[in-house]
Amino acid sequence: MPVSAATDRRIDSRRKRPTVLLVEDNLDQLDLYALLLETSVDVLRASRGEAAYALACAERPDVIVLDLLLPDVSGFVISRRLRGTEATAKIPIIFLTGDEDSYFKALSSPEYAVVFDVLKKPCPAERLLSVIAAAAERRPES
Image (tube, rainbow, N blue to C red; front, side, top):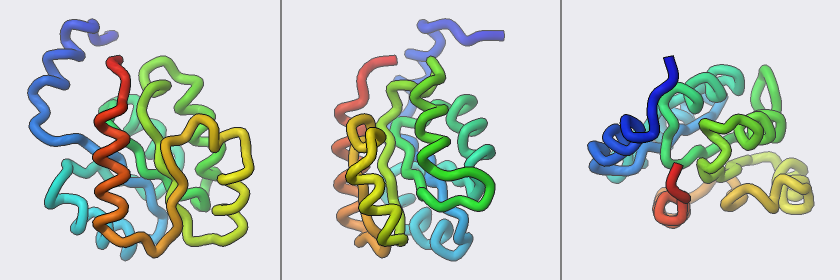
């Protein structure tokens, strides 16, 4: 059953802090980044692209931090699927990658025009939180 726009606004207005979907296949990094972020934002976690897509559709976080190299599907593919889905199309996406080639590919790809930022791991917590806060502030109304 679809959720009405009025219900969506009520759900969002009850959130006291931004909700961030953190997508990272390295479970140690996922836990570490989540631990660092949870001081300022509510964190949803996913370690696979398909799980992240389903969670984003169900929970509609304020920001998605998306690793580009995932074991089941690339972050680029998930990003395109999120942009093509009405429920998630306006959620700001931040690419986060430790892979040099993926980082430069993200900066030069068409996806760069529709993502909020591209960050390189290891990313200091303060920098990641700063970019997340800026993305959450600029998120258009759903």
